[in-house]
Structure formats: structure tokens, C-alpha cells
Length: 259
Image (cartoon, rainbow, N blue to C red):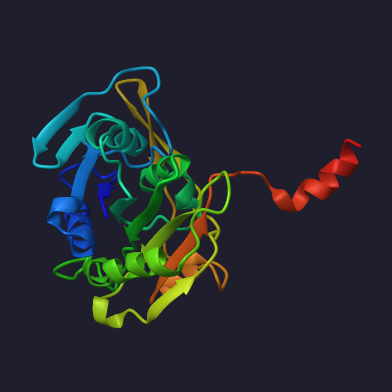
């Protein structure tokens, strides 16, 4: 199995080192390629550098940096770095912070997996939730490092993948606790946190207005059976996703509107 890893925190991010170790455990050092953003790309979602070229730099054996987004890195990996033998699996992360609930929609970590799925490559996004249970640990990625390989292996061996034109991909969030305190893994839906939407915080300096984007509290619970609820209760949250944005449950009503 050939694995391509990427992230949105950048090529030097500590979470990428954790992900590399997981990938090596799954496939061996010689079967792992890294193509990650040269600089942090958090919050860019599924953005691609459509209007400008991007520089690709080789940093070492099977290790590359791209001056672009996580989705750009996936494209670079599939069509340039690994063009002679494309990846069988793309892993994105491990993000420093959760990509659960509404964060999923902004996440460059998830954006990379969307791009992978668009090219029929199996892909998993992995993120480490932060909270009082792990922020002061020597290794705040401890839960992800300990349990990541097993979660990915279970998905590869048991989960559905190729089942339609918009391929499935998986979003995994590890709980904010020590590895020994993880209670298990749950299949969950994407949740919704109340009062955590992004907002603008303006600052005026020398008569010039600067706008800072601020997020809300990340410890607001979501409904049982959803991602944040699982993580805040000590479980690894696994959410199956696809890029089809159609609200299928409204189609019958919409047909009546335009019939």
C-alpha cells in the first residue's frame, strides 16, 4: 500500500510527524510520501490555486513542500510526485485542534480528503481535539498517536468506500484526553455547536481598520450521536462524508414546488 500524507498546518507541524509515524506503521517507511503546504493553510477549506502556479520543493526522500493549499498538495501528489504509481490512500492531519461540527466546513485538513475522494482515492482526515484533558500533557497528540493506526486500519478493512460518483471519505476526531482515557470509537454524524460561529473583531490602528476573525468556544456540546458529543465524552469520532452537497431529503418537496 502506498500512502500520501498531507495537512493544513504546514510541512513543519508536529501533527504531521505523528501522522507520518501512523502511516509508516500501516505501510512501512518506503511506502509513505509527504506532500504538505510550505506554510500554514488552516481554514482554507477545499481551496485550490486555480489562478496562479505553485512552487514544488523537494526537501528529502519522498518529502515535498508545496506553496499552496492542502487540496493543491493532493493534486501535486497524485499528478506529479507520485504520477508513476499513484497513492492507494491519502491521510490528512493530524490537525492541531478539532475539525468537528461546523469546523468541518472550513477545514483545509478535510479539504484535502475531499480532493482525494474526487479522484477516487481512499482518504481520511484526522484531527486532535484540544481541551483540559490533554492541553497540558507532554504530548497533546497522545490519543491520536496511540489509536490512529487502528482507526485507519479498521476503516480500510471494514468500512464502505466506493459506492457512488461522489466517493466516501472519513473525518476522524480524537478526544481531548490522554490515550489511556479513550473509551472507544463511535460512528457519528456531523454535529452543530450553538453560538460558535466565526465573527469579526475590528481593530483601528493609525486610522486604519483591521478585521480579525474570531471563533467561538470549542467545548459547547452537540447532540448525542454526533462528533463533538462523542469527543467530549472520551470517544474517537468517525464521520462518513461525501462532497455531494444536495439536500436529498428535500427533493420530493422541491419537485412539488416546480411541478
